[in-house]
Image (cartoon, rainbow, N blue to C red):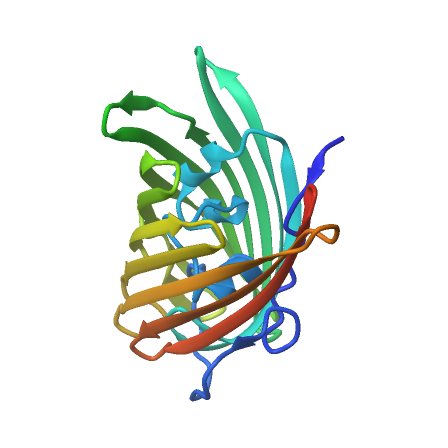
Amino acid sequence: MPRLNNFFFGLPAAWSGLLWLACAGPAGAVFEDLPAGARQAGFGGQAAALEAPLSLYGNPALAGSSRKFETGAHFLSSKRTTQGPGDLAAYGAWALIPRMAYGKMGTLSIAGLYRDDGGVLTQKTISFGWSTWQLRRGATGVLDLGASLKILSAAAASGGDSASGGALDLGAVFRPDSDHAVGFSVLNLNNPSFDVGGLKDKAPMVIRLGVSERREDYTLSLDLARRTASAGEKGNVSVNPGVEHAWRSRRSGLFFSRAGLNLAERASALSAGLGWKHQASEFS
């Protein structure tokens, strides 16, 4: 049977316990790098080296470690984006499909995201990605690469004005052993621009560098990100430390507690979350 994994509900203060700090009025923006799912939100934001299916949004190279078919959905409602104040609801679904191509193992990723910015603007993203599995193996570790092509569409809620474009994400991950990972990614490499209903903005290019460590009951991560200008604001830099603890039970699976920070100009926040995993299913 297909493996159903990570059915994410990212409601702040409700399911994932995401606690955004008080902020000023929202600003219009397009296609920022939002946390994809409650686990990422619990860690403080997307992580370029966090080994998890939904990390494909932050680093397309990470999906290669999935060796079984996986699928799921996620939801986020937030008054803050990675660039500053906002007002949005986002719904997404994804699937990871391991395949053999040209004699090498890899993973095909397919994802879709629908976002409503307070009834003013809607944004749709469809992405198709490929990531390798053990592409280059040496004495010091394993290197994998990944790329995602995204089809982006934004539309004004009134007037029917819309604009479409494409974006490219690139990523790499180095694993010196089974417990550590170092990831690097560039999101929205071509920095596409959109002019919708009087809103002129560019999908910010994001450069991310991350490290993660897995121990018996703990997962630690640290992420650095640099974003270009968006929503009439200059770009910002963020630092995202996060920690997860696994609580083991004999019959009921694994329970998780998570906490993280997003330290950034206009967008600093504290996050916390809970999760449960049993056999092939996970809820966060």
